[in-house]
Amino acid sequence: MASPDDLQFQEFEEAAELLSADPGASTLSMSASNNTTTATAAAAAAGGGGGGGGEDVKLDLSEDEEGQEESSELLGGQKATGGFWTFEYYQSFFNVDTMQVLDRVKGSVMPLPGRNFIKHHLRNNPDLYGPFWICVTLVFSVAISGNLSTFLSKMGDPAYHYRPQFHRVTIAAVVIFMYAWLVPIGVWGFLTWRQGNERQIGGYSFLETVCVYGYSLFIYIPTSVLWIIPYEWLRWTLILVAMAISGSVLVLTFWPVVRDDTKVMAVATVATIVVLHMLLAIGCKLYFFQTGVLLPTPATDPTTPPIHTTLSTQRH
Image (cartoon, rainbow, N blue to C red; front, top):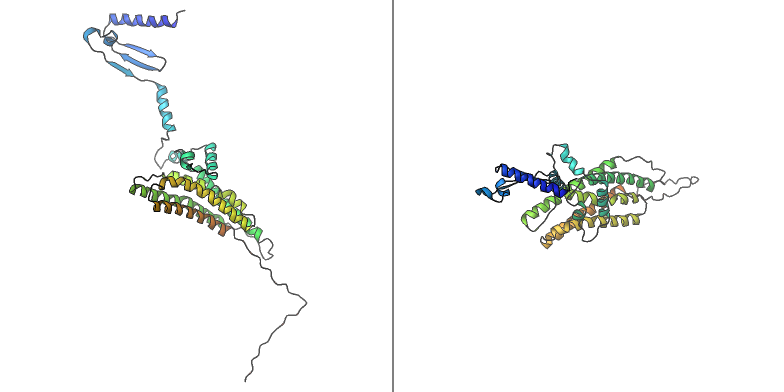
């Protein structure tokens, strides 16, 4: 059986015979290592014989390299999507797996100093799957917990008759979804405007802004469930903790963008973001978790006859 070296020498001998028979012929050299084909002119292969200069033509027919280029485009975040009227365009916004969503939820409830939520958790791949379902869950948790809180607070009142308040679901949906969409639109538009005036100001995309606002609301889901406990001091403690956690996510995300702006504008922007976030939490608490105070009514003795007082006027 011939060894690989014998086969290579045999290949070279056959090529030399072909060149000697037909100087104008060309040879093809196949390399198994990189799957490329190199077409070399016969004059160059003959060592410059025939008085003509050689010309090399290299044809890259590698399918592996084409696959690697496609993979690099996908890893780089370049998604091939159609127009906004196609289903594939919106499908790309929900292209996340469970581990990615859990990692982003974990980052929203445990913000760490120096860790930007967009840079460390989104990684140029924002989604709408997590923010959408977080908002939907928060709507029902706030409305249902508010109904249970009202029922428990008035359970000892004999004149109270429980009626499901379904309108609270509608109100909660309008408030939460308006906040999760309109406020990011305002923040994104303002940062885009400042980026145009101040060249050193950075910015995020609209989808990234909506994504970070949606995930920052997750902490209010367990907080709204714990608001059922009828103790005001506990409710206000929980709301302060939730506002501190969710507000930290927003501050740590947007402060690196606005800190290069003027000092007054940077502080005002971050303060506005925090105040709007606080208004959402406090408004939900005051509207959906009202504490009814039962005032004791004076007891009347049925055996004591009522006293009637007659007022008469006399002429002087």
